Image 1 (cartoon, rainbow, N blue to C red):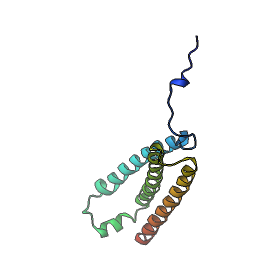
Image 2: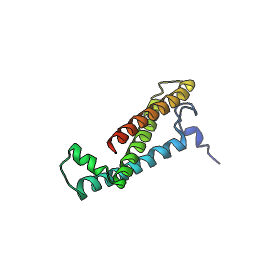
Image 3: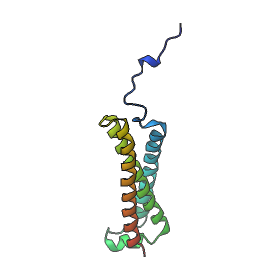
Image 4: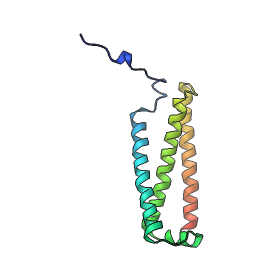
Length: 128
């Protein structure tokens, strides 16, 4: 007697409104990468060369290519992780219909791109 277990599983939202496998993997993997980059930043900037946190010392720390890579990585993964997390929260709360989920994805991509552009502008001005 084979029992149908799929009937006992409750799924919320329409398939187009769910974050899906790639969304979950993206969210969790970007979270892991963020933690690694955060600890690398803390160790490199605050423990290896412990100096008072001033604007001048921040500019000096940004002269190192490794610190630049870590900080740009933090920016990239923080925006990606934040946009995916915001999308998941909004879709889990079921605040919009099927058509709205598509517009939400485009809106969050545009917002993420704007945040990345703004962050890169700030890095560009700080790094000579």
